[in-house]
Length: 158
Image 1 (tube, rainbow, N blue to C red):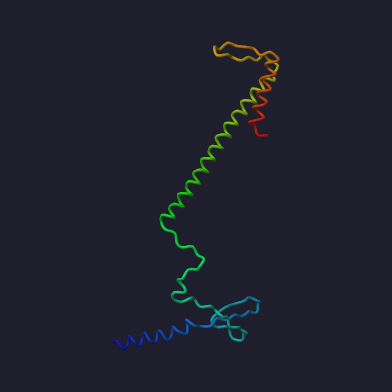
Image 2: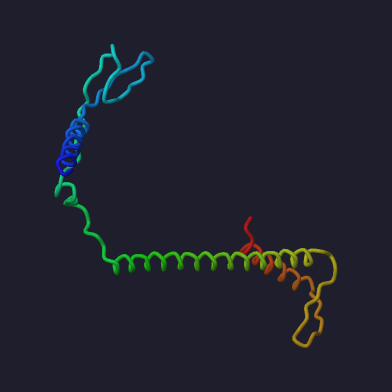
C-alpha cells in the first residue's frame, strides 16, 4: 500500500507542476475587447504575457528598508490616548462654543425686545433694589436705547 500511496503522490505532483508554471496569453476578440487566459481560442492571434512570480522565502518576508519598525503595544496605546484626548478637547471646545452661541442668542433676543419697548411712545420705567419705579425721561430713554443697540450689535448675527 505504501507503493500505491507514493505513486499517487508522485502523479499528483507531476500534474501540478505544469499548472503552477502555465503560460498566460492576451488576445482581442472581434468586438475589440481584450481577454487574458491560459489557452487562447482557436484561430485568434494571441501574445504570451510575462507574469511575475511571487518572491520566495526570506525575500518575501523582508520588510522594505524604509519601513518603520512595528510599534509596541505601549506605543500604540499612547497614540490612542493622544487621539482620544484630542477628540475630547475638540468636543469640549465645540460644546463651549455652542453654549456661548446660545447665550449670545438669549442676550440678542432680550436686547431686541427691550429696544422695541424703548422705541414705543409709552412711559417706560425701571425698578430699583427696593422695587420702586423710576420713570425714564427722554435722556434716560436715549441712554437705554444706545445701551441696548450696543448689546444687539455685539450679540446678534445679521
